[in-house]
Structures are given as structure tokens and as C-alpha cells.
Amino acid sequence: MSKPLTPPALTVLRMLCDGPMHPYEMQQRIRTCHYDEAVKITPGSLYHTVDRLAAAGLIEPLETSREGRRPERTVYAVTSAGRDAARNRLADLFARPAQEFPALGTALAFANLLPPAEVARLLRARTVALEALLAANQTAYDALRKNGIERYKLLDHELTSTRLRGELDHVLALADDLESGRMTWTDSDATRGTE
Image 1 (cartoon, rainbow, N blue to C red):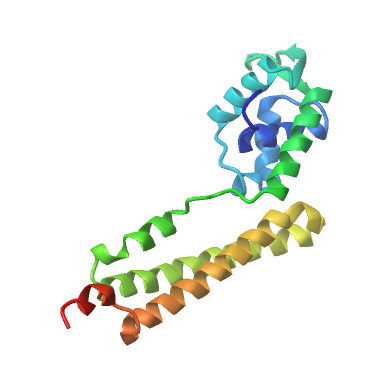
Image 2: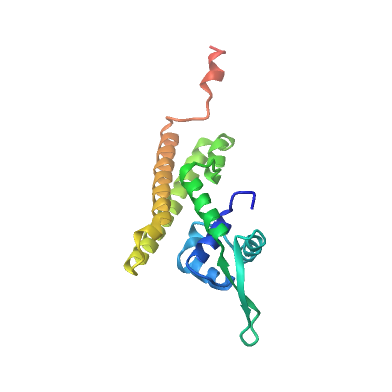
């Protein structure tokens, strides 16, 4: 693969580093390990990703079997090239911050299309949703830890909690500034020329 590994490709390689398996089993483990909370991956994209990785030589089919009337299942294994590609991509993800474009950033960039009071109201509503997400993430984290999942397997949950707390603090501060009048949509530079 000449392009960097996508998050779904890295997920498939990660699954296969634990041992050979078929895509349906990968899909089950992705849910069980909660990787689907860190990576957007659907069953369709999973099978497409498996096909692309096999074509690139990063994984290889080991066997194909059929049980009863079920469809054929091909068991795949990671190749040494696939293992190296996963490690290299992972090292790159750790070392280099990527420019991401969260939807909230878009909304904030264009906030002045709405009245400040409406933005404050919407931000207050967002805080409720953020608090619920934060609580749900913490509940899942605590349950996984209680079930014996090691902390190193939950670092993405920790990042999610940190991100949600940071966003919650920022949104609350913005709502406070809008409601108090410390921030408005008045452009002070535009009014200077008329004084």
C-alpha cells in the first residue's frame, strides 16, 4: 500500500497480530474490545479493508471453510510486511500530530451566523450531551477495568475522557462569555474607523 494505512486497515492488522481469524470474528472482537469507539468501521468497510490488505500482501488467506449452510469463511493471517506496516503507521500516528477537523470547530468558525444568545443556548444544550458522553465513557472504562482489561488496552478511552472534559470546559466558558456579554459578534476593528 503506497498510501498510509487507514484506521480500519490498522484495526484489521491489529486484530490479526493476535492470531489468524476470519472477518466475522474480527468484527466481533472489534466490538468486544470497543475498538469501534476509537475507529469508525462498519461490516462493509471491514470486508473491503480485508480485500485491500490481502491484495497489497499485508495479510494472506490461510484457509477457507464452510459450516452447514453458512457462507464460506476465509481465515487470514498478518504477513511480516503487514506487521511492519502496522508498526510503522502506529509510530507515525504517535509521533506526528495530524490536522483534524472536528464538527464543533466548524460550528465555532461560523458561530456569528447565529445570534449570540442562540449560540449560548445551543452550547448549554451541548454541555448536557457532553456530560452524558463523559459519564458513559467512564462507565464503560470502569466496567472494562473491573472485568480485568489492562489499562494499556484502554488508552483510547482515557483520551476520549480527556477530550470530552476539555471540550466541556471550553463550551461552558464560551456559554458564560456569551451570556455575560464578555463576547459578542461586534467587530471592534470595523467600528474603529467610524469613531
